[in-house]
Length: 315
Image (cartoon, rainbow, N blue to C red; front, side, top):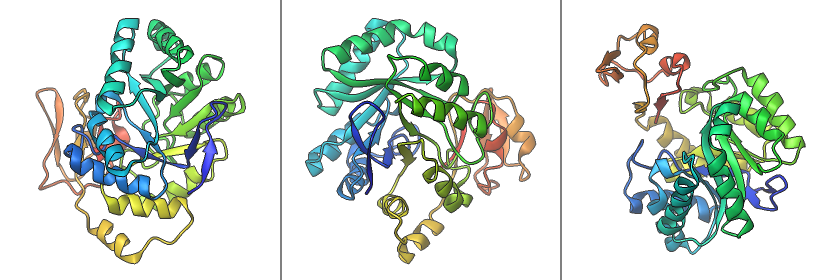
């Protein structure tokens, strides 16, 4: 496994980051024990970096994996808190539920614009103060938007940026993949730690796995890449790819046969664009949300490409 310094933070991380969303209640809903098995495999194979969030509900899974392996990874977590009190509660919850004293990286979750950054300033000040006290090592933001990366590149108080980067730009809220890469390069050149998310577009680009991974791995101004993994087979495959090794044939075959399903996140706005895009008539809007008919859905991912709020995933 290759390791790099995350910008100017001094924190050394593996090029492959374990994306903790998919094992939690928002998607696969694994028990802490089952989720810990997947994380433990990654830790044992040299992945030393985990991305999670308060929203993901995976703190117990991470705590269990650390206890199981005796390996303490670099952990990045996030919160939507916008007040000092909310930020304090989020930090203490993370420390308590993962049973760790110091949080390596704490991010303001899913920032949308300069205006959002301004609205979360009170929380940011709390994180900066916590960093000065040694409770947090690095402070940052996660975002799907180019504007936020651009803004944070110029903010000396921001250490780490977690942007959405994939070959098609699916999920970017305010521009193209070229726009995002321009902003990411700017932030990288200013010493920000950059670890990207959604290289497979929330599963919508799974059919182009090899191409997608080559794309992100060849970007010289991204330190680490968070990949969601929900099985030990996926861990082995991704570790092999990141290490430049051949993926065992039996692992490829097992994953090729793995049953995938369409997942619609709770923030779906029921706009109906996915319904219009679906050629299988497998989607409809009920009670203001999109709903998939599993018997008709062929898990092609075409619907995800038109969702304006990136609420459609394949897992």
